[in-house]
Image (cartoon, rainbow, N blue to C red; front, top):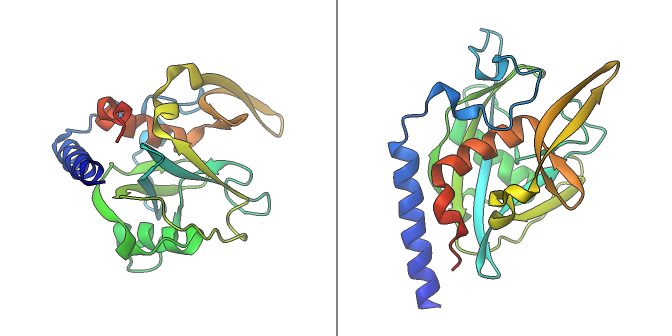
Length: 217
């Protein structure tokens, strides 16, 4: 147990340092970009773009890091049936960090005082929904007691970080929206495809903290 705590502390500080030190090139969201991106996800966002935030929460379970993702219900207005990080639109006057932590609590029942914030990735403009998304990165030393809100979570997916790092789980899928079809790089998990803004954020995040994610506790 003591060794696990020491390793958790070491990895947490290493990731915090990498997030703070990275220069964030304009190409940081290029990995996993769909065919139809045409640079739109890299902005600049319009003046009418709606602020939003998500949380990439790393936690330890079974000796390895995991990340919770959400399958959105088909009843939702935006991104119905897609896999996403917990998050949503900001309330008036709300900071990106406050928004991300509030949404994490509302959607998965994880309170802000249960996690440690390490930093953030640069904002990502999501063209189809006109959201300017601020990704927050946080950790917790053990699996939280998740309590998904059925109104916003059809299924909770707990993805091991080694799975996300393994390129054998990377594919290209065909997305159809009405009469339009296009190809998108994706990460597969349990027969599902993680693509779009979620994959873009995960790709940038894994590029920054990548090497140490393969280390187990």
